[in-house]
Length: 159
Image 1 (cartoon, rainbow, N blue to C red):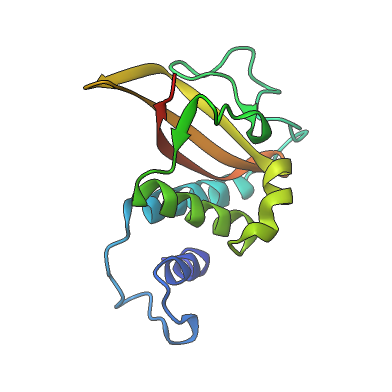
Image 2 (cartoon, rainbow, N blue to C red):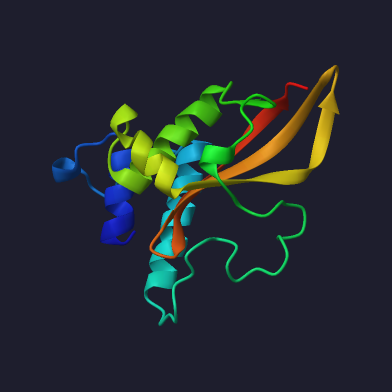
């Protein structure tokens, strides 16, 4: 593991960094931690490549949304009255992992930062199970022209 990935692994597993041994430490990560680490590694790889002008929004260089997804929208505009999310421990914990990856801490004091940096998009496909309609939602924090971290969660339609 690289030092940065090792440090992130230590933080996500709540290990004490000063006594953390990357070579011999091999506890499995949760799915949410794996997603955050994957995004972190992707950002590291991209950061080492030369870049041009940084886009101001996630949609700036996209003429159409990625297949299967809506365009990215500001988190402030999320339709909480139509979609409920964060019901599972995986989703709730994953959102906390993402918040930590974005801001280095978790708490209400990040609410203003979230309103400035969080974006979301909805999957085109809705899955019906029993009487409920489920939809995939991708949430990310957009900083310095790129997503610093993203997280996929499941929402339930309230309409």
